[in-house]
Length: 86
Image (cartoon, rainbow, N blue to C red):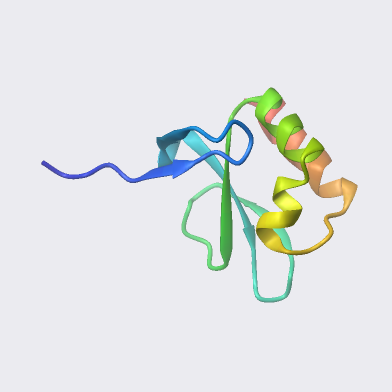
């Protein structure tokens, strides 16, 4: 039986299947983007497809900690747009 990859949501801190989560990536040029394929190169962080988890992560600055850099408000707005659109 093949093992299903699991990742931890940075918002609610629950383990879920990798394909259920949204991957956020920081590449070598310190650019943050949303990885829809799950295969982009760079440091990744995972979050549930849930606005509550995103707001928890923003409030606790978990994304900034994961990527070790200050994030622009535009990145958070892009994430909100992706989660709300689904």
